[in-house]
Amino acid sequence: MSTEDIEFNDVVERVKAALAGAGTGTGQEMLPTETADEIIAIVYERNFMRSLFPAMPMNRRIMKVPKLTGSIEFHAQTLGMTEAGTASAESRATTAEMTLELKTMIANVPIGNYLIAYGVEGLLTVLRDDIASRLAFNEESLFINGDTVITSTYADNINGLYNSSSNPSGVDADSNDYLTLFDGLRKSAGKSVSVSGTFALSHLRSAINQLGVYADNRADLSLIVPRNLEVQLLGMTELQTVDKYGAGATILSGELGRIYGIRVFATGVIPVNQAVDGTSDSGSSATFTSAILTHVRSPIVGNSTVAERRFSIGFHDEPTKDRFVLIPKQDVAFAVRYGEAICEVVGINTV
Image 1: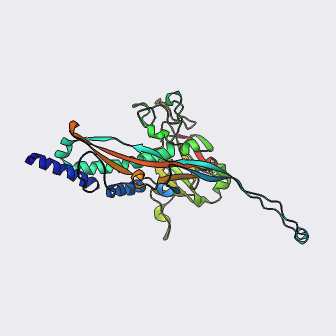
Image 2: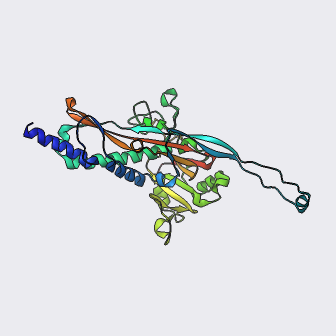
Image 3: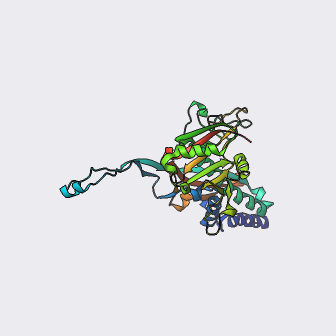
C-alpha cells in the first residue's frame, strides 16, 4: 500500500471518528451511538414540541392508545336512598382507541472522497450540524403541517402542491413527502377561529372559548405562532416574557412568554402563503397565515425503544464511485387524541 493510500485511509477514519467514533472496514456499517445521542440531544433542544408534548416509548411498530369518548356521571345520593339501600344509577366511562404507528424519515447523503481529502474538520462540523438541525426542522414541520392526503396529485393536501418558486413548502412525490407520514396539528384541529385580517387578542379569547372544557386549566394550553406573528406579540403588553416569570418558574425550550397564562411558542414552519381558510396555496397571491392553540396532552409523540431505529447513521463505502454515503434515519410516531382540544386561528394577515 502506498503512502498516499495510507494517508487517505487515515482521512476516512478521521471522518468516521469525528462523526461517531472510530470505525473500521468498508461496506455497510452502523456508526456507533455517540453521535446519534448527540444529534438526538440537538433535535430535542431545537424542536420545542419534544419537551411540550407527552412521549410514548414504543417497542412495537404499531400500538393502540386508549382515549376517552365519554365520562362517568355523578348522581345525587339522598338519605332516603341510603336508608333503603338504593344504589345510584351506574355509569361507565366509554373509550376508543387511536393508532400510534412508527414511520421512518431517512436521508441519503453521498459525499465525494475528494471533499474530505481537502477539508475534513470544516466539512464534518457542517455535516453534523446540518443533520441535526434539518431533522429538528422536519420533525417540527411534520408535527404541525403533516397531512396524509395525497389525492389529486397532492393538490388536496393542506400544504398544497410543491412549486419551487411559489410554494416551496408544498408537497409532491419528490419534495417534502415526509409531510404525508402523519396528520399534524393543523390537519387534526377540530376547532377554528377565522380572523380574515390582523390578529388581535380577541381572536385568542375566541379560541379559548372554542376549546371549552379543554381550556379550564390555562397551564395545559400552548399557543404556537408563526415568526411574523411573534414580532407582533412582542409589542403587546399582555405578553409576559420569560424574564418576568419570577424565581422558580419552569421555562420550556423555545418558550417566548405567556398570554393569559398560556405558554407561547414561535416557529418558522407555519406557512405564510395560506388561503384565508387555512389551506396552503401554490399560487403567490395567498398571503395569510395561522396560529394553533392546543391542549398539550392531546398530541402524542411515539419514540422507538430500539436504539438503531430511534436514530442512527449508516455508513456505506462506494469505492467505485469514489465516495461514501451517510444514511441518517429515524423512526417516529405522531397522533392526536382529541381533535376538539386543538383550535387553529386562520386567516391572519402576513405581516
